[in-house]
Length: 364
Image 1 (tube, rainbow, N blue to C red):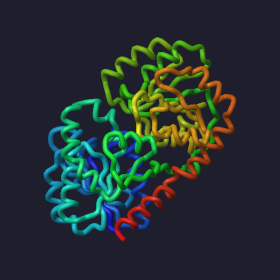
Image 2 (spheres, rainbow, N blue to C red):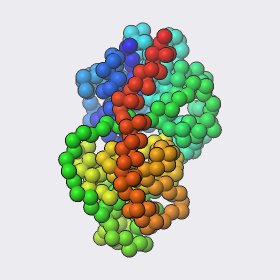
Image 3 (cartoon, one colour):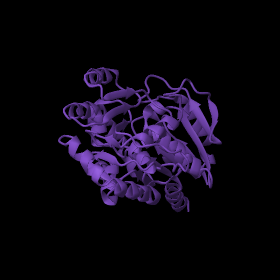
Image 4 (cartoon, one colour):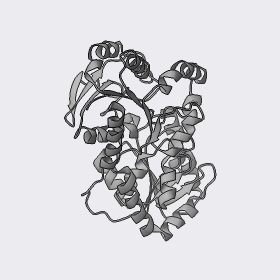
């Protein structure tokens, strides 16, 4: 099968977080049985070359105008008109951008099947967060394009339920984000570290986490590591963690250093205060046998609860001391259950098999 993936940003645009890594991982595995090509923009990159090979996959980085949120790219129209006939199926990632409108419209015009992978972008909070009126008008205009997609892939049942509050697409199915299972990352001694690994943004609940931590006498170190998405928010939390020597901030880490941090840590925490469709850092932690504390606002929390491999917290009201104590008392159980969850739901080859099956069913 010849598949074209259309996305507003792609690796190495790691500033956009987990979805960038999950797209890269799944394409590596999908390309083993399909011809995969990616068309994207230079958003989040240092003006990446127009054409590039990443993991032996052809990636076409188009220039864009105005801002990184909408990625207006006239060259996308020209490219699709000239080339859309070459592909058996189109996959469109994200919703709130020029790429979605043009790609879905041209798929309808040229009668090409298309799959939508919203990756959390259709969540109610994503709509209400900024430019609410504009987004609601936009949603009215594109509703038919969403409804007429051959399939919509959700990362979790949590995401599926949230989207159903806004629209009710008929052809939705849940396929978890893919995680690459590391076979050899070395041996690391566990240290008394509570680790937050992710973007530094106000919806992540980092300020609330720091406040709770500073009001405890836990004999642990709290490490906050990630890409600074919101400078004002970073300055706010910086004032908080400067008051407590147990708190350490690290800038965005490469994958090797992330793995080391996770392996060294007692547990990983994701304290998101608004809905989050998945939570890649939590899945990565379970791969490396590090138990987790997860907000009930994160889609991955339902997987964690079902497999009993960590602690689920209400981000608005939780006891960090109690969460740590529960993990201390169930450490080996959570490690083993987390490993089982990854093997059954998150491992990239399993996810690729499900997506391949979906593609084949649509194209048949």
